[in-house]
Image (cartoon, rainbow, N blue to C red; front, side):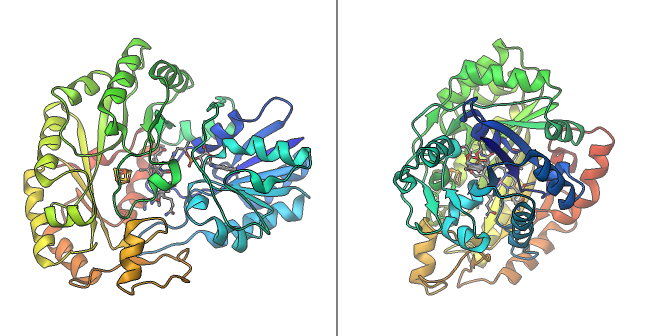
Length: 449
Ligand code: B12
Ligand code: SF4
C-alpha cells in the first residue's frame, strides 16, 4: 500500500518551517507501507506536485495542515483556499483517499473535514495513522479509533497517544535539502504536552496537558543526526522547553555528551529558573530564548492565567542576559482586562528588559477548547454556533485594537527591535536576502540595538 504524506505549509514568515510532524507520522508506519513525504515548499507549482502524484499513484494521501491563518489581526491571511487547491490537485491526479491531520487541523477538525471534503481525519497525534490504515485494511470500524473522523463521524474524542513515538528523518529527502539551503534550520521535539493553563492557548489541547518526556540521550542522538546532515541551527518545538527544568537540563547535558555543537533555541516560560540554569543551557549551545511573556501587567497576566508574575519575567530575563543569550519576548495585547493603564504598564516595563526583541500581537485569536472561548461567549463576542475558522479575535471592551496599535507604534518610535504583528514587512524585506547570503538561524537577534 502506498502512502503519500504532504506538507501543505508554504508560509515563509518568519521563515519556512521543516514539517517535523510528518517525520513522526512516517516513523509510525511499518515497512509494509511504501511511504513518501513531500513538501509543497519544494515544488515550483501545484502542477509539478500533480505530476508526482500521478507517478507515485498513492492509495492514501495524508495532508498535514499546520497553519490556519497567520494570526495577525491587522493583516489577516487565511490558508483555506490554498488547501482547497491542493485537495483538488490530489483528486484530479489520483484516486487516493485523503486523510487530514496536523496542529491546525486538530483545532478545527470538523470545519476542515467539511471545507476540504476529506475522507478521513485524525485529530491529535498522527501516530494513530497506523491504527486507521490497519482498520481500513481489515475492514474494521475506524470510528472506534480515538481522534478519527470520517465524512459521517464528526464527534471527536481523543486522548494523548501512549504508544511508541518514532521519528523518521531522511537527510536525502529533497525537502530536507530545501531547509538546509534556506537558513539551515531543522527542528526537534524533546517532549509533548504543556502542564500550564493559559486561557487563550491551544497547545494543551493539541499535545495534551501532561508532559510526556522523550529520553534525553535519544533526543541528543537525534540532534546529532540533524547536525551531521548539515543543519546549522535547531529549533526545539516544545510548547515550553523549560516547563520541566529537570528534563530540559538533562537534554542539555545529553547534547554536550553527544557533541552537539550547533546553536539552538526554543520557547521558554519566563518563570524563575534554578540557579545557573541559563548558564548551563548556554554551555550546551542554547543561543536564542523566546519568552512567551504576553504582558507586563500582573492583572492581565492573572486574567490570561499565566503561571508567572512580572517580577518573575524580570528575573528570568536577567538570568538569560547574564548567560549571554539572545532574548525575544512575545506580547499578546488586548486580552481580557486590557486597558490604557495595563498597556502603559507593559510598555514602561519594557525599559527593564534590556537588549531584547519584542514581538507584539494585538488582539487575541479565539480558539475552541480554551478558557478565553468561554469568556468571549459569556461576553457575547462570539456565539456557540459560530465557525471560528475565519479568524476571530477577542477585543477588550476597554481599549480597541486600533488604539493599542497607535500607542505601541508611538512608543516604538521606529525602533527596529519592536515588531508589531508577525513583523511581516520587516521579515519579508530582510530575511530572504540574509538567508540567500548564507546567514542561519532565526536572525531576530540582528534587530537588537
Ligand atoms: C514550534 C512552533 C513554531 C515555531 C517553529 C520553529 C521550527 N523551526 O520548527 C515558530 C516560532 C517559527 C512558529 C511560527 C509560526 N507559527 Co507556530 N507553532 C509551533 C508549535 C509550538 C509546535 C509545532 C511543532 O513543531 N510541533 C511538533 C510536531 C511533531 O507536531 P505536529 O506538527 O503538530 O505533528 C503532529 C500532529 O499534528 C500530527 N500530524 C501532523 N501532520 C499530520 C498529517 C497527517 C496526515 C496526520 C494523520 C497527522 C499529522 O502528527 C504529528 C505527530 O504526532 C505549535 C503549537 C503546538 N503545540 O502544536 C505552533 C503552531 C503550529 N503555530 C501556529 C502559528 C499560527 C504560527 C505562525 C503563523 C505565527 C506567526 N504569525 O508568525 C508562524 C508560521 C510559521 C511558518 N512558516 O509556518 C499555530 C497554527 C494554527 C493557526 N492558528 O493557524 C499553532 C498550532 C499555535 C497556535 N496558535 O495554536 N511556530
Ligand atoms: S505555557 Fe505556553 S504553551 Fe503552555 S499553556 Fe501557556 S502559553 Fe500555552
